[in-house]
Image 1: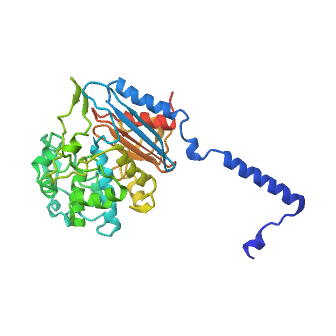
Image 2 (image 1 turned 180 degrees about the vertical axis):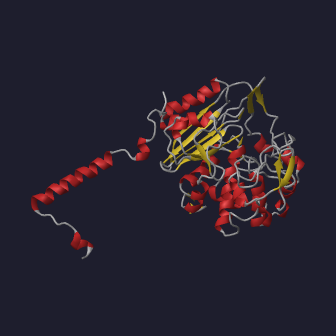
Image 3 (image 1 turned 30 degrees about the vertical axis):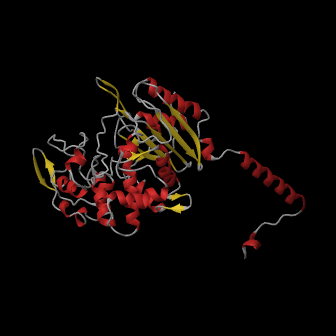
Length: 413
């Protein structure tokens, strides 16, 4: 029997009634809001601005900007300037240090190389960077040989055993001003130093947020045959039109670099003098976990690619399968008390329990933040993404939660 033969045939009044019911149903569907439309908070615009103004009023941040996209269009953009002495109004050309929002960019670089078949996730890092062949692990007041090899997947998921501080309290891998770039000539030298320090645990056995993307940057260099900065430019920034995203600040870019608002302990005020990282144009030590400088419009392009499953305006950068790998959970409840209800994928949070943060954002939401309070999230199920940028210390994990409540609504009074 053919498909046509299997259809129920109707004639006369029966067919007329069915046609009328069908037309009514189609009309109702056309007038009903889509799932994504229904998920947006009707008061979103005003509530976002209220959050921005409260952040300034409460001296959490200085001037700040929010961008929200939905269904391929920008639906909200608001800048709130503090007008405080020492602050600078945000313009289209303002640059921000995005710190750990560099990490997802490094991850995408690795995904492009993985798609080329240049390595496997379970490959030992020492296959490409030999200095990681014989690692040690902290064991009380001494060390012991690691029982498992450091694999590439461990770096992608922060399960390497490397943190941001060494176990004896010395900070050669820390955020002390300029320690990374001024102490190390390039990424290979950095890796050679890192390989000498004991891990906190055997690779692959636990979660610890740390220096992993710096090592991934060197892997990108070995696998691609290019410098890390060159590969990011060729594989990501040029295809996405991210013309303002870079590891360096020359004189012209320095003039557009947002001052840092500090409200920590007894320190309060703005400074143009504290970079905490070295953005010297001559540096070859470019760190994929925290080193990039960008602007809201550039990072929105990166988010646009992610929310469209790897496609940017008709051009595919990475596959849907790579996005799925990036957003697969590898560690649960990564920062209890600070990022409740969130798991860790490939250096992005995955919102597993929206009720824990009190927003109506869906479970498929993922994203990350930067040390100076840059934040973004991707909501692929509703085709929404948001970017928040400011430059402020100390870090405040509640900012993106407040913004998600403004965009989607809150589950709490």
